[in-house]
Image (cartoon, rainbow, N blue to C red; front, top):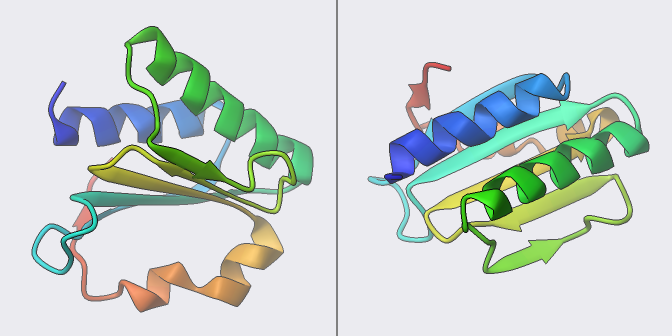
Amino acid sequence: MDSKEKVLYIASLAAEKKALGVVILDIKKLSSIADYIVICHGTSNRQVQAITESIGQELKKKRIVPIGTEGTSEGRWALLDYEDIIVHIFFEPVRGFYDLDGLWAEAPQLSI
């Protein structure tokens, strides 16, 4: 699975768990840290955890594991680092506070 297929799959997994505001940013030309960033949010801590768990479990079935994770148990902001794709799953009020969408405003968005 190449990066583009993987990022679209991740976005679809988030959408299946009713994630809101799912955005895929293509950062290949802007940064060397990854090819894509996925940003989405849930309306409760539990939903953030469910989105995070679903993405992790489904990718693990395909033998894709993150190189790092942060905040997965708190449900306020979870980060999943799949090397070429970084996934940010926020609790809704926290997303606005950190404004990663604004930080990466120059990045082209991929259609979901």
